[in-house]
Length: 114
Image: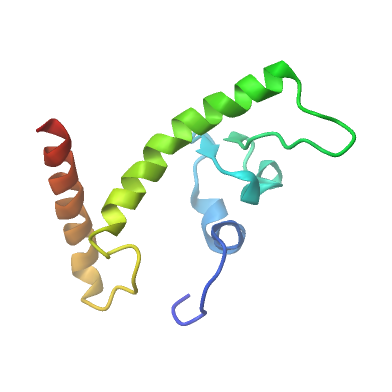
């Protein structure tokens, strides 16, 4: 997969990752993941309104619940990107990538506790 350029996460999921994800794992995505239910039954994406059909109060509440759960993960990813390990191409030894990610996540968790 290296050297293929930019690619949307959902396209990568469909091509490579989808078969490796366990069915028990719940996937939450944004509206860019329309159609993920065809590939993974235990998935949630926000409902979209159309020109002719506005969202009901229950659908709005469901969208709010999904976004409240997702925002926590999105904020953590943004904090990790400060260290540039996720936002830039990783140019060091692949073997050490997991170790460095663990160290960065440990620093972030220590920061949260203080």
